[in-house]
Image 1 (tube, rainbow, N blue to C red):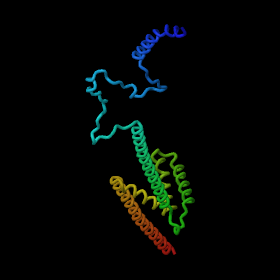
Image 2: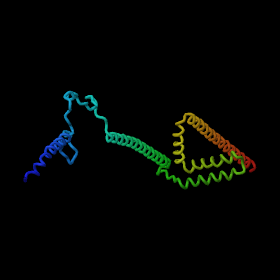
Image 3: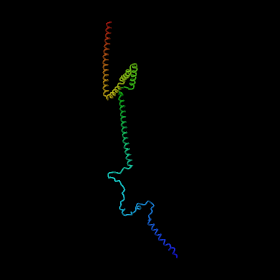
Image 4: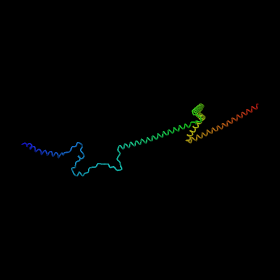
Amino acid sequence: MAFRPLVRQLPILPATAAAIGGFSVLFPATTVHAETPSEQALVRKPIYSDLSAISQPRKFEPSLSPGTSSPPTPTDRLATRIRRGRLFIHAHAKIAEDRTNSFMSNLLKQEQTITSTIASLAPPPQSGERVMPGALYVLVASMAGSIISRNRSILLRATTPAAIGIGAAYVVLPHTMQNVGNLMWSFEEKSEVVAMNHLRIRGAIIETIKQAKIRGEKTKEWSEGMVRDGRELVEAWVRKGN
């Protein structure tokens, strides 16, 4: 009597077992992973045996020839641009430095030339010639020439002060004027036409001065002869009177 409830429940066991077995078939047990399942867990065996012979598609990999190198990276391209910029700046900086050095060398050379030229115009110390008082005398002579020719024509007013000043300079500062003449001749030699005209004018002036000296000497001799003849005539007339 005590086993009747248990016996009454026995028909339920087969039904329960069948339900559990069907559930296990339909939903097989799988392992639950906390992280992403690995590739081996995701790979399943194919249902058909023929699919195992099918090869998996290969990934495309660009083939490189043995002589070619890998393409440059952005870092390599940036380094190349920086190197080109540095070379460009260095080349132009060197050109600017060379031009600056050349300009300064020419400037120093011109300064030395001007200094040596001015020093060459000074008279020698043993001559005893002083430039400053002589220059003042020449200036005063030029002003006197302008005063003399103030009521004359324009040509005389322009040439008389210069002529008197140059003449006074040759008298007061002979060595300095000779140095100035040599300097002007060195400039005139660079132009053949100017040099020939200078020589022609200088020859004419020298010839005029020479003729003037000759005529002056002849005039002096003539005047001395006339004075001597007059004195002799006066002396002879005095003797006759006595």
